[in-house]
Length: 121
Image (cartoon, rainbow, N blue to C red; front, side, top):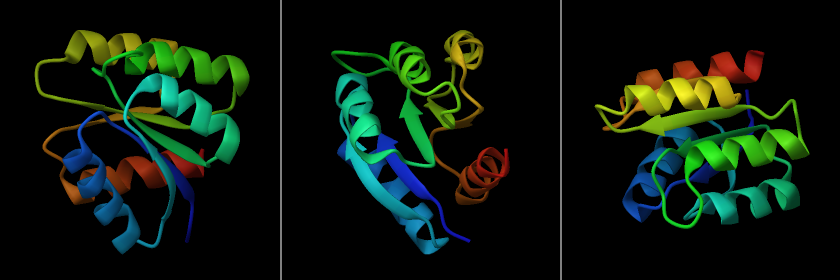
């Protein structure tokens, strides 16, 4: 059961962790981006089935990126990644169109549950 996933996070370590969790579960990570602006550009290039999007990033934050991706593709599947204590931002993200959110540090089971749910529609 595959899915093409774009990982957007300003921390290379977090991208690596997510890629590892996803790859072990049989998902294909088709790209990664270090901020929302690059994420938007790569979304348009790669047309992934799902995006994992960090909330706080330089240049373009995750919430702005979700809104921009949703303008390009209203059916985009996006899961937000947030640190503890970012609940208000998570609510903004869901209102902007995110399907779900996962909290750092990542729990592999929770990540995969959110991904499966989002891909199932």
